Image (cartoon, rainbow, N blue to C red):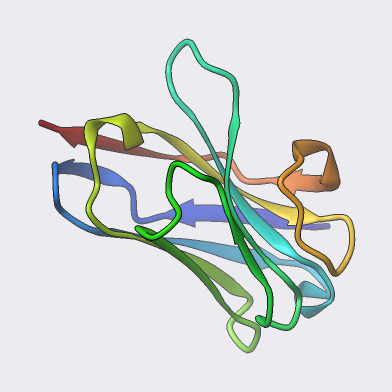
Length: 124
């Protein structure tokens, strides 16, 4: 059984940084792409970033490109999201998800397992 557990969220000020972690339990972590999504109050879930199984391909949503960095450590079954230059618009619940295959995707439908989410709040 696959489980994803996010951590690292919190309350920060605009301009600060946070690093989110997502620990994967189950088989085959290194066989799947991983992604991060976020959902702000009253809004639909939005793509943030994804990374291929091999760490070689990353893909970012337009709102975070240049500020956020996704990475993974296959030896630790963990995917990370480094978030820099945070703004109040980044306030949301952040979810990690396992892709259905090796390659990256921005579509929520391309992911089959999801974590419970971690809250990130950025004050102005």
